[in-house]
Image (tube, rainbow, N blue to C red):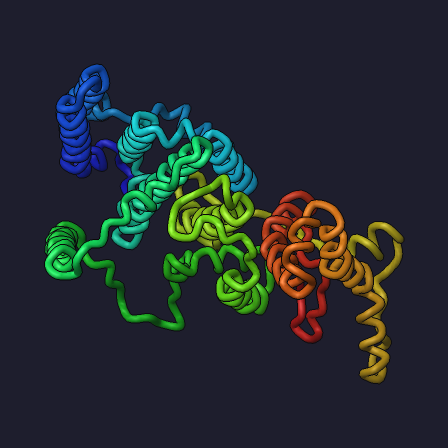
Length: 442
């Protein structure tokens, strides 16, 4: 990382100048596209002005001068670092997803989506003038993840906009767009030509990528020298983040297995046949919300968190904070059994005397972890019938006992992650059931 900000700005000036120039051309092309459409002259003028602003920012960024390069104020960066943490990040991303869902008809408008894209790209450019932010975002390993975040945003917007349009058509008694645009396309030559063009374009992009970015190759792995932080591949960073809250057997084996089994079981437990072959949200709100929450909040946001905000010793760092390897956070994690026996009852933990028979030792372990066992029993055994008689009564009637129990338990296992995260943040709760004697913790 650069210790001299002036030197860093000189090194990155060419990239920042090209970045803002690219954004200017992008908005100019959007303005040209809108100018050719009837009644879109005002919007075309708006994006032309935005493009000109980017073009003006380009030479300022290319100057490499600390006084001229556009960047976020230092006070704002310090405020973001000081007020960013796992709790705020997780709660904030959840709140954003809820807002986007409730007001999806507004956010899918092209002008709104294009404005959000411009604001996010502008924020990215202003933040790139910070050495610590740029060191993480421009790391060759992380560049494709940045691109994937924007691509995910685009495809989510595209699918949501089609779903909103189909829901509007359904309210008017019209069939989905897919029913009207069901003209068959020949594999040869239409599909083959399209695939060929995509292959050539992707090959060109990969060639330019390989020329512009150095391959992130490091020295051969050594057991005596491990990287800090030691991170899994980006697609496993969500699982690595789960290890903060769960034991490896649960976060690395049980949850991934349940994800695979749950995805295979969904077609057999879902009784709603609407939405097959076309985009919709209103006709399948429960399925849509569960999948979006599980994918975006419990997977994508954890990958972003692990990639950009987890630093040395797996500590959390703000986006502009220096990754200090000496940063230490004192955590006093306590098991539920300790809270119950020592905190609530004010007595020592039940334990067998040395040399006691195995059966007696197991009895003391069960007694010690009885509060946690009862909590888990109520969670997995009492909640499903309770939900069947209240909020999920309609699902239970239509699904039957077996399919409903599969669905209920899949939801409970999925909900266990955010619940455990909240308990860890709020009460420093490490394990609900802790049996280190047999490496069984939950």
